Length: 605
Image (cartoon, rainbow, N blue to C red; front, side, top):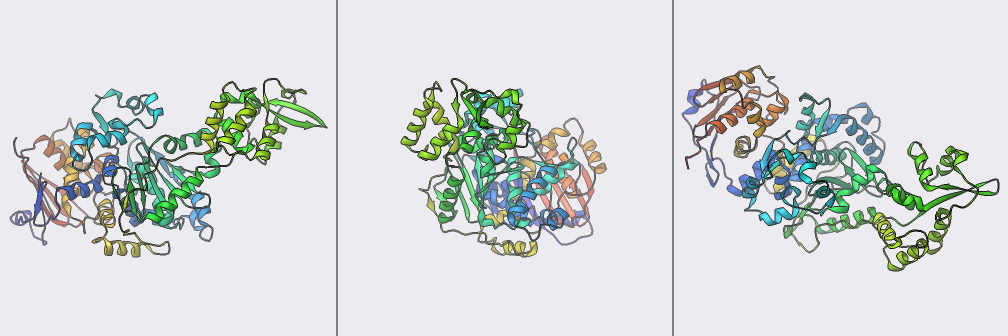
């Protein structure tokens, strides 16, 4: 693909612009204005589209998106909302809990396969073969053969994601959205709120935790697995973000359905990337840019978060999560000096519709809600008394990570539970999760951290990132993810626009070029990005709004797909934009660019 990019002075007409073409950017080399080689162009164009696969191949993109969101005026405006203004003097923890409810109220989890279109395994493997081998990709991505989380394969991964209606080579793009694109879902038919997929929500949470909750970036670790993305926030006992929700350590071990789902990624999948303000570490790459001490600290803190000592409270949570074992247990209460007994499953049934919980400080209130008819005055046969089990735990201080602890508990349970060994192993797994993190035996490069603080303003942070971008790739890529077309090379944006925007093509497949131009003319003319920032064609198509220059790129994408042997020019002179192909199409822009872009025809085979 050849891309001409040249900034021009203000001129009275398009024809004058068209006579001065100097910049040349070629997919397999570069001269003139575009100084990127093919591999750089692939990475920097990936910062524009931010698909899950692109982030897997270029892991620094994950933090670049966080920085783009931190630069966004949208999140900074949240600080002025009443619910956050009232918390200005409160702790970061209080602010974070309010942020959780705000995100739950304002954002929807979206995993619609067709939001950003479809691609193919073959195409993606070919595209990235210079960076990661197809075999390694297959080991780490579910849509390419990864089978780390057996849950997904028990339910049939392609059917689970709705891919069974396509041939086996088809996979979704699953692009990660900027905060602007997430908020723009409000404009999309069928949505009443903003939305985003798990990686988008993780990036949003990380940026908002810093901007709104005053949590230092160095205390936020992004944790990516093949099928999920979440953050570990090093606050109190540790907090995990999980899509729209937050999971404290207490919640992690409460045995509820929501917590069990939140556990699935770290219990079953390999962690592919950990991203941090100091850099990142990748399961497949030998070099790690994350600060080694920061990564060691993270592994210790996450390990502590994922481990709890055995107690009757934890045991109750285990039974809550494993209902099939409840039939082996009973609870005992004192009634005027006489013991009464209750089946464990009956008590859990009461708990389900109550505000009170088993084995915590509301336990007595829960028992008071139980009907007297459900208690019996005699010990139930073939059931273990929970009070006697609690006495064993307190007396022997059972540690299920040690053989003697498991053996002692198994001996106590054996007379009642048929496969006590399996029961104890499940319980041991419940109270301790061993996260499959990238190994420490990497080549840790000298760190080049992003050093911004919670006391800085948005303008100060942006100026700092602009200052370091020449020597910090993550900061440089952040401006591409931010879509700052005033300071970025246009070649990556153009490459992404005409190669990885299938939705706009499919959405207008039945229309002629003239009909598409007419529809674009009728479409709202407001960009979802402020200032000198630009939306990609599929963002314009999905949200049915776009500035004139963005509409021109959408039309160029469709024309290039329909007529690949045709030269295309986009000529922008302040408010006037013209696309020249076989015919000419004119648009009005508020972006104020003075730019000439030529997308030459694709050579015939």
